[in-house]
Image (tube, rainbow over all chains, first blue to last red; front, side, top):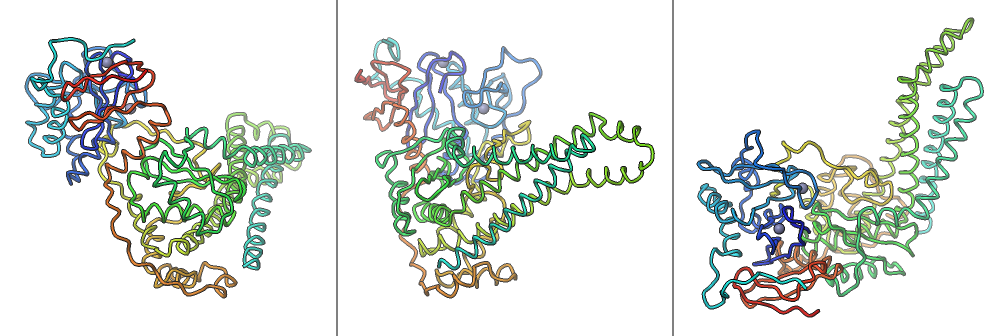
Length: 151
Length: 401
Ligand SMILES: [Zn+2]
Ligand SMILES: [Zn+2]
């Protein structure tokens, strides 16, 4: 699958048998709808899907920029505001194929989802933060350098 | 045994002939409607050519077209041993001589298909959604059901009937459009002088036929399909001797867990419907809504044993209709006990989803890297990375070129 922002091929990161798609160029993360469902099912949160829809209120008319295309179905995704307060956006496929976290906003969105009070989302956000920590463990963190090098 | 197949065959042939009759009457009437006085024979010819053409394509290429459109990937044993072993077991239990080809379709909605014109060149295809959802006993129930269709030669019958249904719907639809937009009737009425009224009656009759023919064709199609479906449930249960496997599989398929899709359905403008998956045009579809899944589950759960006789009794008890198993088959039925429930196979929903997904990724030449932090990284061939850093722990991994 290709990154909806920069078109680079994304790698898949599997942790605890849940997969996230990750762009090594722009550090964005695709949380596939099926993977969200797997996560919620494993947590026993039966109405998690409904709660997710409630939280992701449609944003106003003016899009921040050109809409991104869903990496699964290729249709334009909606930009949706998460929670309230200063605007934090994520992109969501209208068919429910999944949601896209921009690399720079990943932790802001995860924090907002985590603070939303719904248990399923706190766990989903915690999962994203677990796989993509703000800072790497000190012993493994190299002094800068690219995440991956192409040949 | 042969007696029963022959009697079923005769019934099936009768229904195929009825369906053909609907198609040809419709063809003739359409021709008369569009071009009165002689057009009927042209219409008949068009219907005949359409039927023969579509049937030939479906017969020789239907399975390839279906598998191609679904982007089904053919697997080997090592790609998905669990699925392969279940198919192999059911192939032996069903007495099929040739191992069917096995395909996986990358689709989150759970479904299974059987295709191929003869038992010797058959294929079963299952979606990744199905593989993730079902445990071993349930998967076995579904595969046994598909094997029963292959053994009973239902696939070809349903394809040929599906093609005729498709042709009837297509012709009626085209003619109704032509009448409404092309004003076929208007030019007719103005040109008529003497027998205007009689012609008007004929016109109305023809239009009614355009509406009735597709309904009739559907009724015939579903009459056959429903019966073949119950029979495959009964037959598959004989292969597994465990009706609860299929029953709980059908139940899970009918009520899938939470998905983001159901959450956003209200805002979704529309869903893509794959035309070739409609009404068994090219393959037998496990989740076709006829007969209702709930009823099939109830019948399977009411079975006292695993034989045809038990299925027939359960069918009568649940539906309050006469039995569905042919009498000759019932006479030969051997009492069979239901197997004890097997121990849980120890797999989880996520684990099964990974197994199915990884099979497809392997076929697409992904590189798998296991990181010491517990992550598994899956790198697409087109990325052409020589090394990759684990995002969770920062470890670097060299990739073989
Ligand atoms: Zn990117
Ligand atoms: Zn999409």
